[in-house]
Image (cartoon, rainbow, N blue to C red; front, side, top):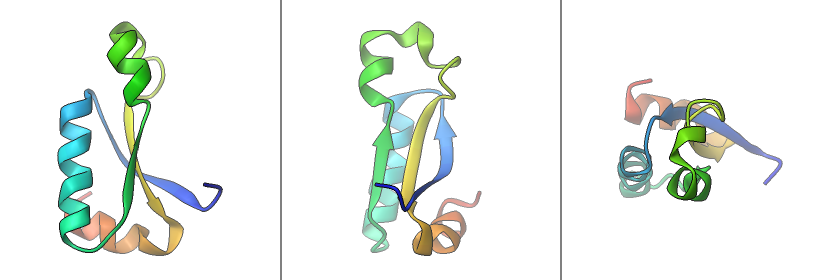
Length: 69
Protein backbone atom coordinates (compact mmCIF):
# COMPACT_ATOMS: atom_id res chain seq x y z
CA UNK A 1 0.00 0.00 0.00
CA UNK A 2 2.99 2.34 0.41
CA UNK A 3 3.38 2.74 -3.34
CA UNK A 4 -0.20 4.01 -3.85
CA UNK A 5 -0.84 7.62 -4.80
CA UNK A 6 -4.05 9.61 -5.04
CA UNK A 7 -5.21 10.32 -8.59
CA UNK A 8 -8.27 12.35 -7.61
CA UNK A 9 -10.89 12.81 -4.92
CA UNK A 10 -14.68 12.89 -5.04
CA UNK A 11 -17.34 14.20 -2.69
CA UNK A 12 -19.13 10.85 -2.55
CA UNK A 13 -18.55 7.12 -2.90
CA UNK A 14 -20.57 6.43 -6.09
CA UNK A 15 -18.51 8.90 -8.13
CA UNK A 16 -15.26 7.44 -6.82
CA UNK A 17 -16.42 3.92 -7.64
CA UNK A 18 -17.32 4.96 -11.18
CA UNK A 19 -13.81 6.34 -11.62
CA UNK A 20 -12.32 3.13 -10.22
CA UNK A 21 -14.43 1.06 -12.62
CA UNK A 22 -13.35 3.23 -15.57
CA UNK A 23 -9.70 2.74 -14.64
CA UNK A 24 -10.25 -1.01 -14.32
CA UNK A 25 -11.73 -1.12 -17.83
CA UNK A 26 -8.50 0.45 -19.08
CA UNK A 27 -6.33 -2.06 -17.22
CA UNK A 28 -5.38 0.14 -14.25
CA UNK A 29 -5.95 -1.30 -10.78
CA UNK A 30 -7.41 1.35 -8.49
CA UNK A 31 -8.64 1.54 -4.93
CA UNK A 32 -11.32 3.70 -3.30
CA UNK A 33 -10.28 4.96 0.13
CA UNK A 34 -12.41 6.60 2.83
CA UNK A 35 -15.55 4.89 1.50
CA UNK A 36 -16.42 3.33 4.84
CA UNK A 37 -15.99 6.58 6.75
CA UNK A 38 -18.26 8.50 4.42
CA UNK A 39 -20.86 5.75 4.52
CA UNK A 40 -21.03 5.73 8.31
CA UNK A 41 -20.27 9.42 8.96
CA UNK A 42 -20.95 11.42 5.78
CA UNK A 43 -20.40 14.72 7.57
CA UNK A 44 -16.69 13.84 7.80
CA UNK A 45 -16.23 13.55 4.04
CA UNK A 46 -15.11 17.14 3.46
CA UNK A 47 -12.85 17.28 6.50
CA UNK A 48 -11.16 14.01 5.58
CA UNK A 49 -10.31 15.22 2.07
CA UNK A 50 -13.12 13.43 0.26
CA UNK A 51 -13.23 9.93 -1.14
CA UNK A 52 -9.83 9.18 -2.66
CA UNK A 53 -9.10 7.08 -5.74
CA UNK A 54 -5.60 5.68 -5.58
CA UNK A 55 -3.40 3.77 -8.02
CA UNK A 56 0.13 2.42 -8.10
CA UNK A 57 2.71 5.15 -8.55
CA UNK A 58 3.76 3.77 -11.95
CA UNK A 59 0.14 3.97 -13.20
CA UNK A 60 -0.42 7.59 -12.12
CA UNK A 61 0.18 9.27 -15.51
CA UNK A 62 -2.06 6.78 -17.35
CA UNK A 63 -4.79 7.12 -14.70
CA UNK A 64 -4.72 10.91 -14.92
CA UNK A 65 -5.02 10.71 -18.69
CA UNK A 66 -7.97 8.29 -18.48
CA UNK A 67 -9.84 10.39 -15.90
CA UNK A 68 -8.87 13.72 -17.42
CA UNK A 69 -7.38 15.07 -14.21
